[in-house]
Image 1: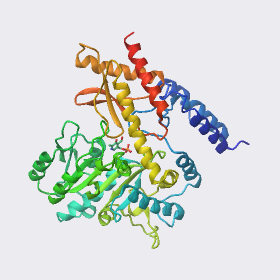
Image 2: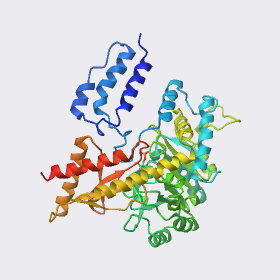
Image 3: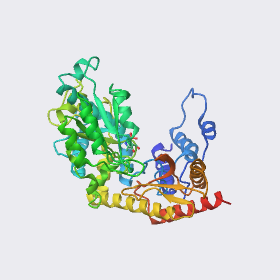
Image 4: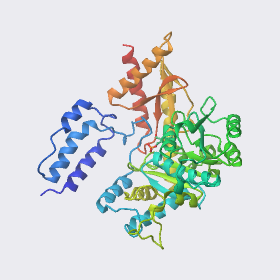
Length: 464
Ligand SMILES: Cc1ncc(COP(=O)(O)O)c(C=O)c1O
């Protein structure tokens, strides 16, 4: 009988080997995928290896090649070889990393990897951490700790008494924030109407004078959320200026560093993060710029006591460990995948220098893409990338703004349909733009040249 793991290895190898030649975006439509997968629930079982062959055959046309070097949509990378392989072991070992006693080796790897990450990002070594499904849940985790602390400071115990009758918490945050901050505030019972927009400058960075105005306008518990960096143009808030002002007003400061926290690892980019270590909590992702498989986010909290108070779970049948860290003290989930293991592997594969080199390389490729595409007739760059995020808009002479918005969408669609590269759109300062997000360890000069050529072709086809 064929081993399904052997078939999985075969199909995985085929997929990974084809990344430099296959279309960058999925080719199958929703109707085609539904037709491929839809079937009555099987009444009886079948051969496991045949299931894997069938899955690979049907899914491949519907896979986005985000692991390729020519995929620049959203903020999505692939996975380093050791991280992919380690992730297979995670599935084979199938450890439930809630408590050290339940999954000793996996809990220890998580303990060590969390310490490595604080070192990598140069965050306060006393900070606690949690491995989450992504940055969204890292926000929820860190902001639950923030909620505990700011309400405790106001004489309220959120975990004991809930939020009915509690002092209102205000979340002050950049107009240019990621929507996951809003979701986190909603999940935590803070509510959308208690999110206060703070004005931003032309590149989306928070304005100090508006922050001061808003801080003085509200008394009561305040959480400030800052950006490192935004996903359109990679702008960082000015942490060194903003954080001390907010903390002097009693606010807890949280940083969304989904990918931007990695700038701290690069000598060249580190100045963008100056003062970030003054914050009270940070959220980032492993599955973006560290190139580990989905899903993996990480929260760090300076006030470990607040973090533990917000998360710890006690149950008579779960005995805490006295000799090692129990992840359940820091996470929402009770049963958990050992998602720190691919991070442990990736950090060894690259080392500190390798992470820095990968970050610098992505930023260089982003600059080359923005300037190469931006120099094509009909293209206009909207930023001079400071990080790995760029924007380009496509315009025809004498066309209206709306016509050029539509033209930009048309060029993106043509490039995506060519399979040569894959982009996603955005709106920046009211205008449609093509986002160029470079996060993959695989992207190289050849991918950059090929992508510029594909956009050139799309522009000429659009005008043919
Ligand atoms: C700046 C920023 N914050 C938060 C998130 C949410 O991250 P995740 O999808 O890992 O939950 C993203 C996702 O793209 C992001 O770009």
